[in-house]
View (cartoon, rainbow, N blue to C red):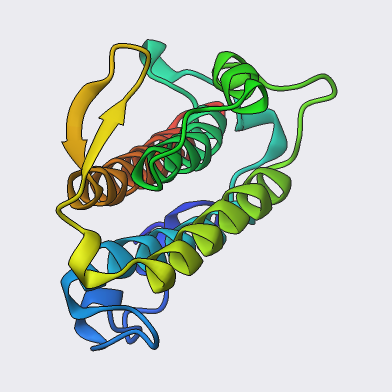
Length: 184
């Protein structure tokens, strides 16, 4: 059994019940619970990950794959953009600029804890928006991007949950690969 480093992330806290098995989330309509559960689980997984990724490995791209830093930074930004569209709003200039900067670290590069804190704030904002989302509005039409591609409130929220889960898993897997590499 491996010990120390990132590996403890996958061995730790097996007694913690996954979010989707904890039941209702206060203030969130039942139709939106899968979205809420995905955001809660991602928040917890990222918080576990934050303290385990050494700063010098945060932006490493093993085998050309995206870095842990990218996944954390991108999932927060994408969540913000998707929830903006779900509200029926257009992206603002700050969101557009942030999108262009997601693939690379700022200078000086933030720590994993800093990235996770910013992403956690986005996840918490998403949960607040879910609490404010009315059951009778989830099938309302929404437009996505400059092309105005068709979706619905529920479609956007579901995709935000799926996208968040995907990038959380990719960040976790990349961290695990780095922890097992000779340079780790």
